[in-house]
Length: 296
Length: 297
Image 1 (tube, rainbow over the protein chains, first blue to last red):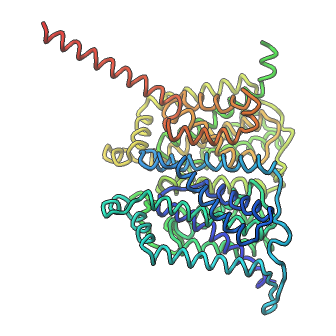
Image 2: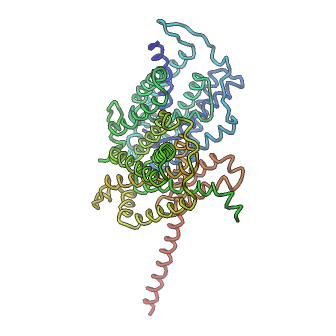
Image 3: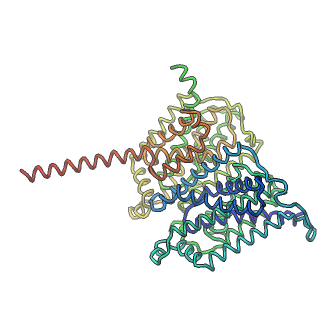
């Protein structure tokens, strides 16, 4: 029973991690706390749903959701953040602007869906169960784990093995110095927003499938969870987001079966609060002193 | 006139309460603290007053005083760890605080009624009392703004390094801002409980937090009139026309994005800045004319 719960937790944790990767990437590179990430995640789920409902195969729906959400993230960047990047109100301004953008996205989705819950068509993914070492595993769960793993490997390869990735890391470290060395930060911002949106979009589709429900408010819950994950994992840290995502997934899955749900919330957010105050660089103690969480 | 007053009476109450919340939010932002804890303070204050009045039969004055004291104490306690954390990290930590308050209220059903909230709270606060207390708070905020504390707040917000160089203890002023914000937030939360008959945890969650931030973003965070104007605009928007009410979220969201991009100081503060610039230009011109006149003579 416990093993089954842990397994379920790892699967939802993998999707949490996917969601948080984009969130943490934007913060690491652009120094923007993008609260519209929840809205983009939800929009990805909607795009995936409409694609699947119109009869496209599952892989096409996923691809469409990724591209659509990626473009949406770029639009948010263009309209909400571009002007603020150079202003002195940057840190405060971008967070407020992202709240506004999130409200617009949620409101559009509400109008589109008439405040209804959507479900993916029944046969989007063939459902069959099999047993591994006494644990029940569905094809969907296997597909999710494989997909998340592949995307994670692709992201790491991209960031650490390509010239683009080197540029991204250079801009994350110091955008002005990298500009002097011939890196175009605008290009890097464009890429990171697209990637972050695409990851959020596919995470939206997967969550929509896993919990069999898509609605305009689904982003807020994951946004708040995303905060917990990126802070505990260290804002801007990719391995931290993955580990913290998996941990949160397992914790939540165990907590839902053994604790009252509101108490779980209290514990999760207390963890966030305590983590922020005592280990603002993340539980794994990575050196992120450059992010300036604490006053010197 | 009487019809108008009767129709818009609840709206006016709503406006006054939100002006209070807006001030609670403004005072921290003015001191350069990026706290969004106002709704959390308001929630604590509201439940404190509601429980005291309904379960234990206290009058409105001790209930409100307790709400205010609770806000102050929690504000002080929050400031202890948070005065050393900076910028967006303060925002995330206070957001966690807001979520913890909501989850706790939901959890202790016996005391707070859980997700259903507390209903049939006697209405002990009249509109004129609300108005009077808002007046007092406006005066206090104005007085603080004109005093050394206000100048210290402004310095800390604009440049921390300058503040330190001038011998201003950032931690002390951040603590002060948290305590003031908690006191105002708790007080107006208590008054909300004693005006609106029903309170429930949803009133003190993420959405309300965003709405209160909007008041300040639209109005401005540097002056006394800013939050009042911001609140008036946002509260009046859905009343002006039906489509605005239906697409309220969308309009608000777009408004926030546009304001922060093009008028980052808010409506009122931008206006003041413009007037000051005009005046400076005019004075400059006059001075030059005078110099020219002297030179010609």
